[in-house]
Image (cartoon, rainbow, N blue to C red):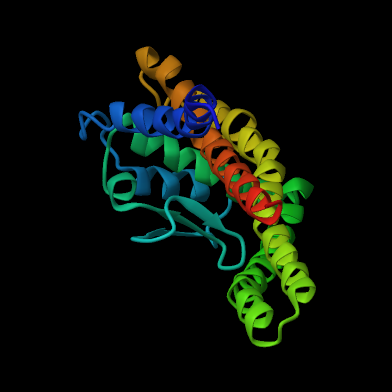
Amino acid sequence: MPVIILLIIAAVVFLPQWWVKRVLAKYRKPDDRYQGTGGELARHLLDKLGLESVGVEQTDSGGDHYDPDARAVRLSPEHYGGASLTAVTVAAHEVGHAIQHADGYRPLLWRTRLVKAMQRFQRFGMILLVLAPIIMLALRLPRAGLVLLAMAVASLASGVIVHLVTLPTEFDASFRRALPLLNKGGYLKREDRWAARRILTAAAFTYVAGALIGVVNFWWWMRILGR
């Protein structure tokens, strides 16, 4: 494959991921820009909206997210305990998901069900990836092994579907829920509003980066199968 094509693929896959990390890191300093931390703002917003039953927790794994099963907003240490612009904006974004859940926002409910189904499917796919070569060699059934391998690759592709389905939910949480809350409530410094929009865009585009990496993985496996 020509080097230029490899470079284009690498740029398409990794530039969004690099941009997301750069934006979030840029506005983590200074860490004391606001009086309250991200965790405190999340708790305040939830209580103000009548969502006292939704928890706010610090997490060391899984990144910032809202867990609809546990009904909890989970924030990474730098966003839970930090008072940077990134911290308070990301916290508001995750609160946006809690609001979606409380409102019965269908795309969020569909995504939750889809993620659970795809996680099981992907675990099954990883088992198939291990079994396919063994079946091909031990039982001398190349076709059966290829079928299993194709099913395993399909399970990997399912992750791309999850990421793409997630996008509308993320943009809704950012721009229909979090941003109005921050602006109307006066939680943002006026000069930070534009930067907050960038952070909220980055929060949503995390899934774009994930989808692109999934596409490349799928393409790589399809090339192997096609040989």
